[in-house]
Image (cartoon, rainbow, N blue to C red; front, side):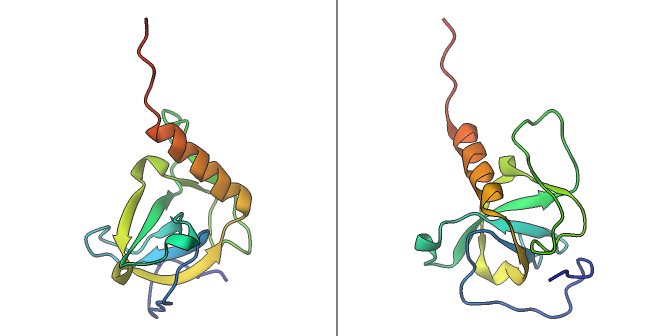
Length: 127
């Protein structure tokens, strides 16, 4: 399922993207160039025009302990070990999503969801 790079020459837009799919964005308001994202939205919420995604980068950021690592596998379609930019969680219109290049292991999805919960949990005030 490797994409041979991030150049998008063929646009495949399935009606339904599933949780755990690694998908290339097609630019638009989200990004100026094609880049991989992880669909994190639960399959039960696949209605409407938007999909909740997490961007994928090859840049590690030691200052952010919330980045979940994704190791290259034939199943995920990535060309390099990468990280989920959970701090950039967002929704994107389906029209900006393109080809599904792979799918991550369930452990990656669990790690991402746990990190999102941590990201959204308020810190207790210090006494």
